[in-house]
Image (cartoon, rainbow, N blue to C red; front, side):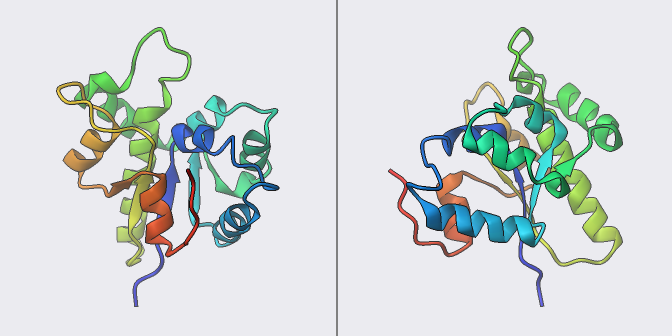
Length: 165
């Protein structure tokens, strides 16, 4: 039997959820809490740095340290990803450093699963779209053989019938 997927979630998803407060969409936040309780969400430390600490999403993310993944163990992989896909890092923008770490975390989680013989798919969740010829997260994921979905795809993968307009 295959284990349910592990989701490595990008800053853009958390930012995109800001308008959807727990009061407005309680079902969404209850289900996200379920994924968190099952440790099926991974939040790279660099993504954590990019989330705003005062709104409900930033507080939600920060109050679940068991989902946080430190930068140090994946530094070499992130460096390789940044070298391979330099468009992922946009020098001068404060919130452009997490992308290589997001992909590196997904690669690291996949490798750890292979070492332990897990049958868990590792999926990158991002609000970014392909920007070819500039390489964006979905393009780098495709090149690295990583599944990549947007928020709607994430909800669909989980079978959630939540309408976010």
